[in-house]
Picture 1 (cartoon, helix red, strand yellow):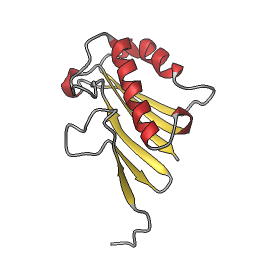
Picture 2 (tube, helix red, strand yellow; picture 1 turned 180 degrees about the vertical axis):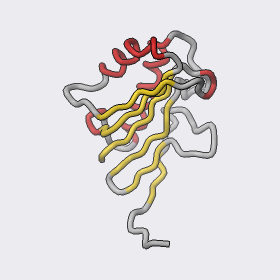
Picture 3 (cartoon, one colour; picture 1 turned 90 degrees about the vertical axis):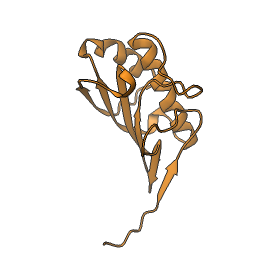
Picture 4 (cartoon, one colour; picture 1 turned 90 degrees about the horizontal axis):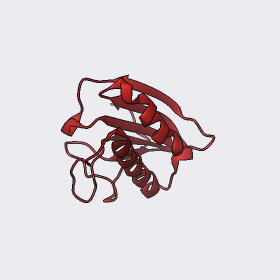
Length: 131
């Protein structure tokens, strides 16, 4: 194998939901942070929050904010996001919540319709951050 010059550092916080499978909340590699997709789980209970797409979107963005904070970053450091939606009819509501977290900074983004998500969540968002 090639010479690895970059070390991987696992980033985690109890202010975001614990991983529910064989993955990390986030991994830092050099000056980049790769955050696993966040679904609307309450970090205190590990359960899906009750509510509509707006409530679920707020929980996801709060979970992302917690991961950014523990890494010493903020929403202005986000380079790329991917949003997974079970129903594209929810796009406008998600976009409103999502957009409220970013100032003039607009990261690259993809939005993808999917058949289903873990725990029957309505959305999942993953991010890539420059530290």
